[in-house]
Every structure is written in C-alpha cells, then in structure tokens.
Image 1 (cartoon, rainbow, N blue to C red):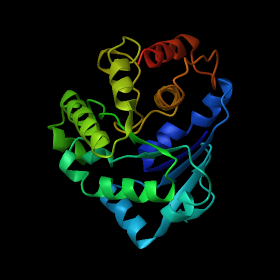
Image 2 (cartoon, one colour):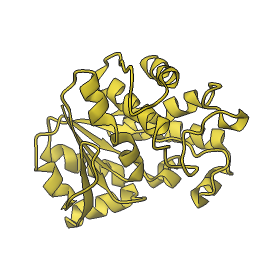
Image 3 (cartoon, rainbow, N blue to C red):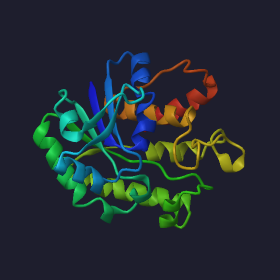
Image 4 (cartoon, one colour):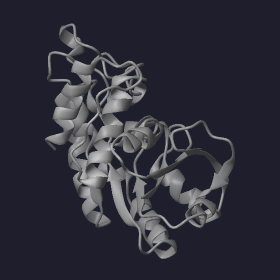
Length: 240
C-alpha cells in the first residue's frame, strides 16, 4: 500500500510511526508526507496550481532529505491512498476549506485516478493550549472538537472522500483516566497542539492504519512504551 499525504506538521505526527506499526502488523506500506509547517488548504492549492517546489518530503516516518512539489510527488509513484487536510487552526471552520479542497481533490484525481482519497480529521488542542488559533473556538477543547468533526464530515462529503478519524480517537482517549491530563493523566500533546512524541503519535498512527486497512491491530511492545497504555490505545482504535 502506497500512501501520500499533502499536509503539515499534523500529518507528520500521524506518519511518524505509521510505517513501523504497519510492519509490526504484517502490512507492507510506503508512507510519504509532504510537509510545510502550518500549511492550509488555500496554500496547498496555490502550490499545486503554480507548481511550487517547497515541500519537505518525509518517507516512511523519517526526516526529510529533499524538497519536492505536489506534481512531482504525485508522479513519483502509483498511489493507493492520498490524504488531504486543513491547517489545525482552521480545521473547524468549513468555509476555509472551499474552493481549495475541491480544486485540490480534482487535481489529485486527474493525476492519480486510481487513488482513494481520505480527509484527515485532526484533533482539538489541549485544554491549556496557548496557540492563537484556539481563540477561533473560544479556547474550548470540546467546542473545537465539535467544529472539527462537523467540518470534516462536510469537507469529506464535498470531495467524496472517506475520513481518517484521528480527532475522534484522541478525544476518546482523553476521556480515559490514563490520558485525562486535566485529572492527572498523560497529555497526548507535547505543546498543547502537536501530538506527544510517544503515545500521541502512536495513537494517530494506529488510527490511520486501522482506518486504511480495516485490520484489527496488535502490538505487544513499541519503543519502550508502557504495555498497558498501548492496550488502552489499541482497544480504543480497534473499536472505531
């Protein structure tokens, strides 16, 4: 399975462990993420339209080694899955997605008609996040999550894509005692909005893998993570 994401730091978070977790589950997968920090759909579309070569290309969760454009990436392989997403601060504002998302989806499908499109539903910020984009949602995590979920459903329907529900899984995990950071649990974010390097990124990778393969995931150990916490994440992911 070959996966290409046109994204930003939130797709970097999701991709970091995706290839490795796939291997552990007996799945051969190539993952490529096109990364510009904070990049929104309007900018992605502009870059595609103008053939701007300005993306870090991250392969199989590794650090980028070269700069590439969207057209080059699309033509570099035959892609089974292509994912699109909005910048995190705009992820719950549907009006910000159009016409850029539709234009980008049409562009992608013209080049790679066999590829299946997914919309990456990202996560709400942590309750104490200092990101200025949090003001768009009244600095309220539950409101941000509600808006993201609603926007993702509308956006995916507009381009006839399926959803990768990373935001749903992160929010579900925040309701467990293990990851309820407001009550002494572990935060799934490292800075209030990016996912933590350990359990947050693991949860996102598991969500992607489960969604894209429909396979029930297993993992007994991963980079020294606590086995019980891995099981909490996988039980949640396998339930979606």
